[in-house]
Amino acid sequence: MTIEVRKLAAPMLAEVVGADTTKPLSPEDRATVNQALIDHCVLVFRGQMLEPQQVLDLADAFGPVEPHITVKYRHPDYPDLIVMTNMDENGEISEHETARGVGWHTDMCYMPLPAKATLLHTIEIPEEGGDTLFANMYMALEEMPQTLRDKVEGLQATFRYGGRAADRNLRLEKTDQDKPLQAHPIVKRHRESGRESLFVNPTHTVGIAGWDDDAAQDLLAEVYEWGNQERFQARHAWRPGDTVIWDNRCSWHSATGENPRRQPRRFYRATIADRPH
Image (tube, rainbow, N blue to C red; front, side):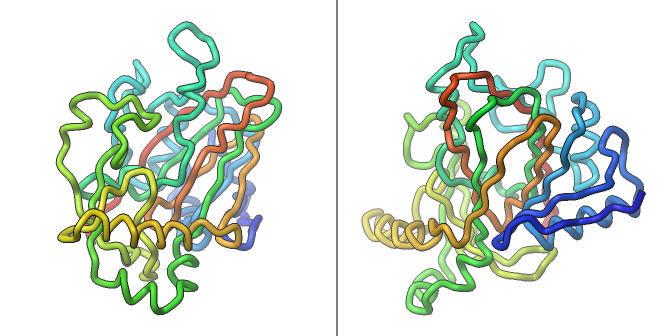
């Protein structure tokens, strides 16, 4: 069956139809979905429940999988996967775990080489709530007022897992807190598309290299206010069997934390590594 890519939302988001994700994709299909990710930033595969190895096989179609920085969330049998859940160790709904992932961020931006993409596959979802938001950072930069763009051009932002807040909803391990700051350009060119995008985020960005902290936070607040506009955003409402993959090099994402019925929410997550330019 030929793969079809259907655009779902104007800022970003497309559905991939006709791909059998229960088995490894052919070279032709791999090329198709990779180009679709470049074109649309966020892809949705629907209606196929996957086992851990099948999730890893699909992630591999987009590039090599790298383990997450936090060891305790890794799958015990498949350490390249992490299990994301709103439940605590006793199987109870946890307010703390529910809040994890809430707030605009980009995965693995705090690494020397930030991740290419993130893949999330449903294991269990609530009947209501639990959506994920995405924001297009190509658009945010391209439509940014020239006066603001002139301020950020040529600057390097600094990043750390959890950003400035040690008590952010991440329960940082000591080894994570001790990792050195990483610096990346605020205006960053995408390796594959060639387009520039805005590459800072409210969760993991610490400051601006070489800047006084107060001045850096003032400028970053201005940038975040600009980027956090609904016209740059798309929302994904999860269904059973959904797999979503997004390009971290040109997007923000955030969980909503909405779960009015207090039902379990669990996913497998794989992170796809990028290559140097």
